[in-house]
Length: 147
Image 1 (cartoon, rainbow, N blue to C red):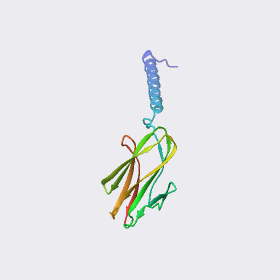
Image 2 (spheres, rainbow, N blue to C red; image 1 turned 30 degrees about the vertical axis):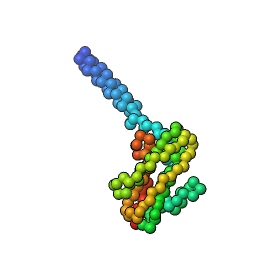
Image 3 (tube, rainbow, N blue to C red; image 1 turned 45 degrees about the vertical axis):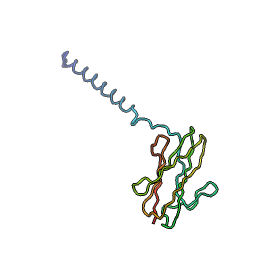
Image 4 (cartoon, rainbow, N blue to C red; image 1 turned 90 degrees about the vertical axis):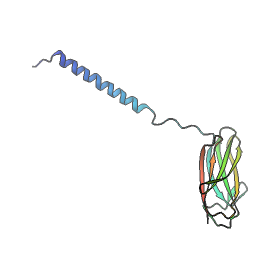
């Protein structure tokens, strides 16, 4: 039977301590959240569509493509879970150019529907409407085309 010296025992104990420290550090890394928590939004966008009108508080003529003869389109927004009175902006873009920004209030509650419209003046091409919160942060967008 072979006896080990004090150095061997020391290295063995040091290796066990080192492995324990590495396992503990690994466990702490896994316990960290992968990303910072998302900011809680003041509202949820349940529906965002573009159509040719609004009838009985519902969008009408909803489409992704409109003929050039369409005079005006409506962007309809349904927001839910509104935790406080706030305001949203409807920002209209033709291509990359911002053409119109329209602010509308939303009142605290479980559901709110509103809309904004834009005269197209026969401008063909790619369009989009961006919804922004009261601080100007984009929440959602809807795209459509005029041919």
